[in-house]
Length: 336
Image (cartoon, rainbow, N blue to C red):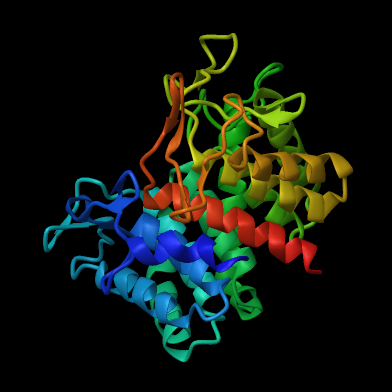
């Protein structure tokens, strides 16, 4: 990837971590730091040439966010940890990042990643959020191979897959192939996780759920020639049939779609999944409802979303990291 693509990442990162928001292309120090963003930042740094120093910053941020009462605080703001934004989902994302970090070439990053993972992974046993469950599944399937040689962790993977399938079958109907009654945010991570699990657990029930749920979601999101992610202006609700809301469309949704379609393609080999992966990447570059690029080549940032009046010109961490993760995935596939 050209160096300019990491320019805004460096702008948004200080010695403590990556800041949450920006005002246009300028970091907002009053927005604080989240483990959500620093987890994504850690994954990006692991895919960078020369990203070791950044990986240390991000993994240290995750380490410090662990509190003495056992909670993992999502937000650090003005010198204090805040619990009001804690969630299972943020813990799940951080588990995935630490699992990937455990294999880092940087000794410090690998050591801290392992320490956090060994301490926090047990919490996944009690997850009830389908997204948190999905991130934990990915932590187990994408992490070091030795994880699943541990009988307890192998049992945890099967437990989490079973729990996600239960969500699906409790919600599923003849016209609704989804895990909840509303299609909201980071949607594709559920089928993504099941496709990843299927590569390790060749269970037909896992495969069918992965196929059907991704097909249902992709039928909602892919239009001829472009990706049209579900907007957060009301989400898409089972009891309100019709077209999904068009706005606001956010980069994290396009990234989630890209990763799920790529996982399905590598598992099943269907050209359709590759084309959808390609369209999900192109969403960032102008193949979208507004026909507008979300990339600021001058700053290296990614705009925060598509709105009815154009583009949200702020360039926060979630948007930036979503874009960079997709670019790394794309580049990695095409270098094989």
